[in-house]
Figure 1 (cartoon, one colour):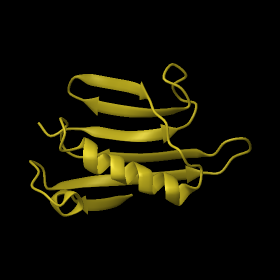
Figure 2 (cartoon, one colour):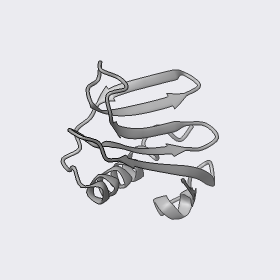
Figure 3 (cartoon, rainbow, N blue to C red):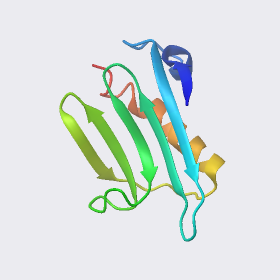
Length: 102
């Protein structure tokens, strides 16, 4: 888990200045468990490769806010942990300013 300066990470202004980023990679037989989860005072969101939520599929996007928890199917085109992290961080930079910043 790491503390992040949100505006520095995004390269633009944002209503909240501090957040946490949790990265998990758990090797296992078959498919590894991988998660990249961002959390600040108002929202928690991330991309998960696990079997915790069968409805949206093994790879999914998860958003937790005052409105509840939402899961959406997602596709991450990589298996290598650093590649998954890079893809998720890129998506996070796009997703945060675009509607998750209230």
